[in-house]
Image (cartoon, rainbow, N blue to C red; front, side, top):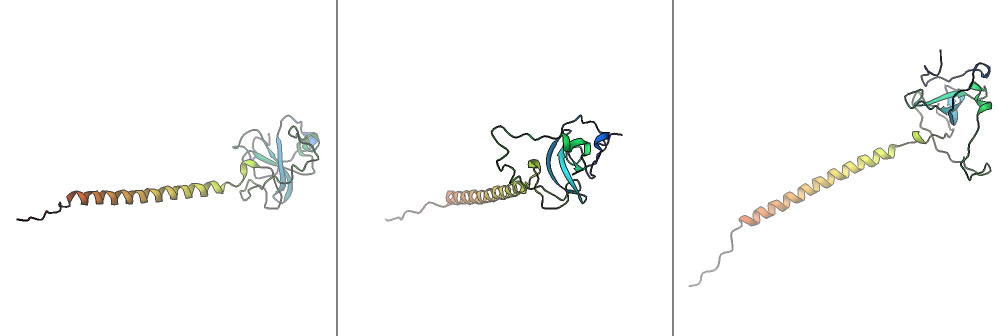
Length: 162
């Protein structure tokens, strides 16, 4: 049975290199601890419905799936290995059962970055729109009331002099 087809995203995958023939490309996105074990975090190409939202974990130092001697890095054109391009690579949200254990490791995972600021901006925007609507309603009602009162006011009487 293919362990990838039934992968639940919770466990750490391992297959000895001698037993595995590489036939698939994945992206190494980070490292950390999963279930107390040091692991590589990899992104599969099968979409977010597979594994841990599209990711899976293999143990570090065991050459699982022959990845530790078959992986290679690609740098964007114009960057050299000497530049400190990996100093600040962002944090990874933790807490879901399919994510890494809580630790201090930094992971490359731009899709999973904290997006709570979007929620706050949305909530504040809705509150502002509601407040502006209420204030506009009060203002228009007051204007209407003033207009209706001025329409029914009697004209000032002229003094009659005989």
